[in-house]
Amino acid sequence: MWAENKNLGSSDYQFFQSSQGLEKREIQRVRELENLELEINLKAERKKLDATDKANKILKAANQKAKRRIRIGSMILTFSLIVVVLAGTWAFKTITETQQAIRLEQEGVDATQLFESQEIEPLVLAMHAGQELQEVIKSGRSLKEYPDNNPQSALKIILDNINEQNQLQGHTNAVRSANFSLDGQHIVTASFDNTARVWDIRGKQLAVLNGHTGAVLNASFSPDGQRIVTASKDNTARVWDIKGNQLVEFNEHKSAVLSASFSPDGQHIVTASRDETARVWDIRGKQLAVLKHDNAVFSANFSHDGKRMVTASNDNTARVWDISGKQLAVLKGHNGAVLSASFS
Image 1 (cartoon, rainbow, N blue to C red):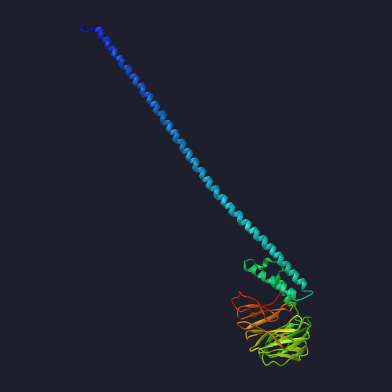
Image 2: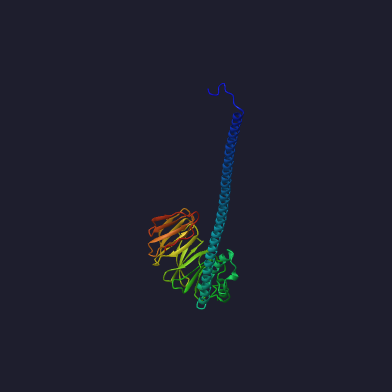
């Protein structure tokens, strides 16, 4: 090699050392630049991370704020809906109560006006309306909220001014039944004093039907109003004329006769008894049929054409029969005694 067996002179050595120092400084400067660049990059990255973190925090805060607003909005909406529903319910209740008040007021006015020409119908009208008003008051509304013409006021006016038509006085014991004649001009009463009595519409006693030896439980007129049939605890039913003369006695029952009634044509009579039978008779007293139940028979009535009968019994049934005594139907369903039954 060229440098072999060569010695550097002083100037050469100084140049060499200078060159080495320059190289070291260059390397140092490069490293410093690299470190500076790295630091700049780190700062930039740090700022970027800080900005991202800040943005995330802002976004999170905004999201939480939005959720709070949504919750508050939902609560406000729910509350508003509740208020609307309550307001609607209250308004409907108010409208309903107002309409009811107007109707009851009108019924009170109607009853009061009707009372000027008749008495019983407006009394019944005012009583029904008053009962309805009583139910309304029970629900919490005060009577003071209703006008002066309410049914209670109308009922008070009617009761203060109603005139009793008549008292039918003459029986010496409790009166068990009372019925009008078909023309409405006569009344027949049946009593525990063993008599039935006939009265005119003004309350004048026209006849006393004497002859039963036990309480008279029922009495009714024939369709033409000229005869009366009575049912008694003495086990008999009897037919009388309007003057109180006994015409026929039906004495086949083995226990108290609880009811007796004429057919629409007045040619037949049906009786009901505690002896567990109802019986059909002609007007002369001949027994035509026996209708059997499993317990006491409380009532028996004809259909409007007179071809069928319906009976009501303590055996929890009502039964339909033809005029010959043939059973046509058993009406089951009651859980206790059937006290009465009638055709439409």
